[in-house]
Image (cartoon, rainbow, N blue to C red; front, side, top):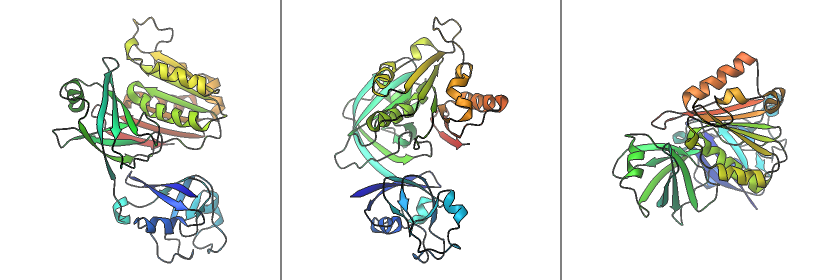
Amino acid sequence: MSYNIALNFEDGVTRFIGCKEGETVLDAAYRQKVNLPMDCSDGVCGTCKGHCVQGDFDLGDDYLEDALSEEEEAEGLVLTCQMVPSSDCVIQVPMASALCKTQIGAFEGKVAAIEPLSEDSIDLVVDLDENAELAFLPGQYVHIQIPGSDQTRSYSFSSFPGSTQASFLIRNIPQGLMSGYLNGAAKPGDRLTMTGPMGSFYLRDITRPVLMLAGGTGLAPFLSMLAQLAEKGCDQPIHLIYGVNKDDHLVKCEALDAFVEKLPGFSYTTVVVDEASDHPRKGYVTHHMDRKVLNDGDVDVYLCGPPPMVDAVLHYFDDQGIAPQSFHYEKFTPNQAKQEGAA
């Protein structure tokens, strides 16, 4: 048996390694040429300390408290030289990837489909090369190099991890470099190079109700998250509020309807900003966050959208005195630069 271990480095790079049953994370990393920080490998120095944010493991009792205190262990800190996983895990490594002699992965594939969904969004589907080992956590993103250019743009996966296809929900920006390519020269069969995965905005283990807030093409990472939850199952209520500027900017609603059927606890609400809209719910997502979905603060909140939306939600929580149990957000600028945070 082997477990997938996601190593999240402080520069945003994520590297996946396989860890054999009974093997320590440190040994598995070195076997796969990822040099995690280490001085002693015996649980004495604490140099290999990281933070396990997801997964089950055993640390044994052969390490010194000077290397890892009881308080640190209670907070999820681990010694990778002692950590033996018993499930897939996600570990935050407090060091840049380059210092661990690893780097961001590069993957290639061919354009399979380009579908304009509205004036505001384009669906891009890429057939991955057979040898492309593209593992990622639902919610993460990659940099896509624009053919004929040395420029890249960053997009969150809307597809399920482990699929032979990668899909992306891309905002259609007038005079945008990627938008210009997709609306003009792009055709099925074009080669695309992607680097990643990147980002700390990803789905954690669900132990309480979840509120997802999506703005425009910020819906993409939630489609990936919901696909994984539909595959694995979830017994907690999950509510998505999906806000757009105009009626025809609402896309992928058929996919959301399918998730309602697959996930008994999932529901969603759509909101349109345009005052001239006939949509039954107008305004912003903050106008439609009632006390039920906030569950008196006992809720995990995930937010992805343009900066004004993210800032509005942050101010709303402050004004209302709401402190969710966990709060993860990602905001994107028009050129698709990603900014992430957590509270």
